[in-house]
Length: 175
Image (cartoon, rainbow, N blue to C red):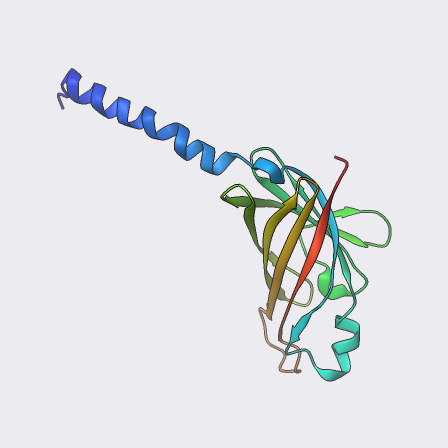
């Protein structure tokens, strides 16, 4: 295959012009870089059996660690086992903090971002967690979150799927 020098130069120039734009979109955490912490309250709960509702309504502390390039880690501090996920980073005592690595923060403009996570939990549960973040100030983020969970193997016990959602404020903490 014989490629002329002009065709090669034009093609290479086009790639070089596109690279900075694509790299900036996928590598910058912007103002969201750092550590954020807050408490999730269950503002909405769906398909939880009535006898489990009080237990599943307990608050969960959340810490989000966002790196410069947009990598994100999620750390949950919980009382109920439904917030314990597999392949986790254990911190603290009594398995009270469950961390998940390998997620990405996707900026949407300068003051909004989203993190989507699909994680496996105990009891054959698979959860999809969506975190929508809006920057309120350099040290405060409004978080709209949701979690939908289904069992990989249904047990038909009335607790094979459930969902919850809420709104919280996260504050910047020291790295």
